[in-house]
Image 1 (cartoon, rainbow, N blue to C red):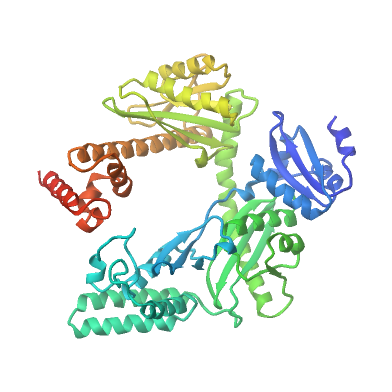
Image 2: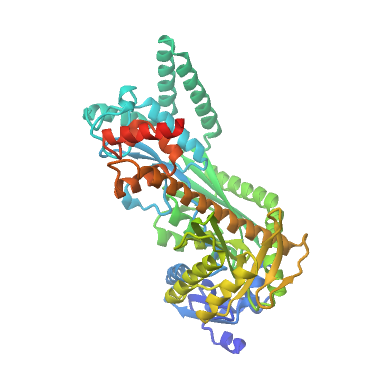
Length: 589
């Protein structure tokens, strides 16, 4: 049947969708010639992840388009809609920090991360900074050297920063536009590459502190100057052209590709980004996927340099930025350098990647066979936590194809405070899967509860009431709180698994993850509950103020350590003073 369907695929551009036995789309691709591309998966020997994907394909569909560009646009939309498991390139949500300068209503600096940066936003961003610590360090230093607005919100009176000369008192004193403009010009000049301005400013401040015999502050600035010199020395000038650009290099070997993107700003390499992934379709097509994903989530510079092998026409039309494939000169040398970095990265890390895959994907497949499941792509794990019946919570973590799917994690505050694991498990299982049925979201092939027979019974009772047939197992721990046994929920027997096997380590990893996630949530709930009970004793703190205080500080300890000025951002002066005195009395008692 599949062969007959393959023969009918037209020799036209379009997007194709590969499906597994459940009819779920597991891969979306595009092609200039659908017939050649779709048939290529079945008429030649495949290796690696491509071979695994092909082994799961039971059906496919396709949509014919007018051009390869239309197929590319359709492919992107379908990937976003179906989130296929083998289209891994659009799932990385890592973003780099930028230093953002905000000029209205008051000049301010902050470290920002954006997953989607658009030119129309007109944000003044400088970076990216692959080292987030360096970005924060620079912002903190600029805030010390220049009197920018540092406090949150819009207070009515000047705060401590004004009195120590680190703010112009924008809230009350209303500084002149000329003062603000002079500060802005120096800061922007430094962020645009003029290092001398900042160094001279630091040296001037150091001399002032020394003349005033304030050697401690002078020494602090000396350390800051040394750090800035180290950071700037690493950013060697590589090209006379000061246009902001990214350089894309890659290296392909054994079905895997390493991509190295160098960030060049104002003629200096300020950092880079590296990724390694397996090629599913072909090199050019997967590089198109990768660059599309990357520049949907990162700032697009004025130029992007890349090898001539990569088809730039589609990307150029889609993103409307300048793609250059230089054939000689310094720009060509930059691509060669990026390619060499990609090669070194792949050669150094490929063995670790293959080992990790063996410990996850292979272990997941072995577990599937042990449990005699036809498929095992998603596992939901549950754990309960309470303190002597108080602050009862449950959490769910999810593993997909052997790896944590953290976007799928969920927290549940149980409706009753009682030391009753059985009914806690019933409540969380009902809430999770009743909602899944209503919203028609993905269901797992396996549920693992952290506990023994009672928790298994609770889960199965609810699943039966919802007419869901999902395998349930329990993970028990020994007296040392280590993973000990896997219980089969069908026959309530222990499933024998060797303690030194990949599967046992896999189960231990999952149990540790759900326990960690649940305990962290439980601590958070207890902390907020403790704050709430403290705030109930203070007259003048109602529900809204209580909510804001909890959100701002998160714990009693942080409230105790907060200066009065910070409390006054939320509370009137007299109430803030009462709260501070009360917190001090609790600390002293």
